[in-house]
Image 1: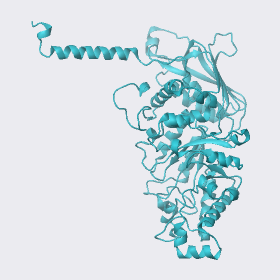
Image 2: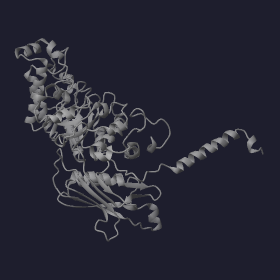
Image 3: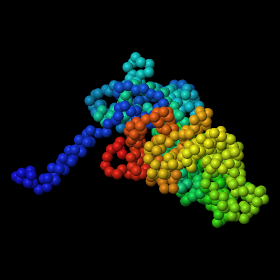
Image 4: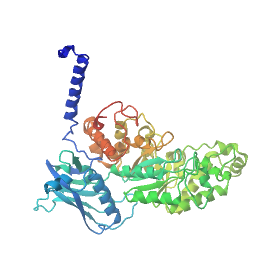
Length: 546
């Protein structure tokens, strides 16, 4: 037998062995949580915790009370979260049955109290809740787990928080709550916490939209801004004007009215509003595929022809049809990036302007205000991109919600004039900007430059925008997540809680943990630390460190 040192490849084998031993040591040490941090995302308003570990019964039952206890939204929400919490557990294990072992659980029932039986979902609905989780020793009246909320939507937010407190222990093969007892009193900072989804630049199937809505609920986002149509395609069915969806890319890339209603209902079950957008007068070339008279001319196709009554009759018909689908009080009318060159270069439109002594800018204002009147007459509050405010603030309907996007400073100007505002500064909250890192998203503050409390109250909240020129089903979730969650915490949690510390120490470990939570729930959230968003991992490693 040859000595070890003389064996063929022995040196290589020895160092290979050392390498694998070192790797095993690294793996065995594992990722350790910073126990000083609270791994709930977004961070609750008020909370206290302890140092106990509680076991949760895999057959967890629901006990309801209050006027809203029997609401379908609540019961379906409980079943949905129960599947998430007990993904790795289904009742008593086969080994416990064979051994005759009877487990003792600290939490066997989740009590939910909902004080209102209203299911109305409008802007500013009460989403507050309290959550108690404590050991049920038969003595304390708050033992076990209890959620109390004024509305069913507050109860849903409480269920999300409870699900994040529950963690599967692979050693005991049981679900546990760490750092109990928990007392959480929570409410959102802003009423409007949105995500824009663009289905014109790339069609997204219904199931994909639902997956995105589901993932929004995990971060407590509550408005899906559905940018359904744009110049590239018109995928939505409009019964009164059935040729409009001739502007879809193909006959398979369309949404029926039933599809749209299904999305709205699906979102409502998760406490999420759906705000539709019909962008006028620009971004509308696709409309003319079904109705060419909407174009100023066949060679100059947008903005929509301001000179024809047919244009406004058709817009009114669209709004009447889709008002039956979208009950949310806000409706987006766009109004951005309007190049009026087609109006001044097309003879019949130019003549119409001259007859009324109007400039192209006057016509732009005329068009926007006329569309606003239509939306208001149908019970909507109009939302417009900031260009309308920048161009003619003095003449905008006072109900207008100004949607910022071009940069900072617009919301301070808008609220100073009495308008409400939504913050979406493209430099930080446009998710298609892949070079914007998570910390810039996290640090963006909707109230920056607004010090007057009454003016601060006019900022409804904010919205991250998923424009889909270079995103489709193959990568849209990776582009949205996890950066959208950084904005979600900014919009939900107290300003002082997310602004006053070194976020690399206080937020980044929690953010990494939430990204991995999304992955565990089947959401394709991309690594946090890559230079560019939605890129795959650069090499082997733990989800919690990428």
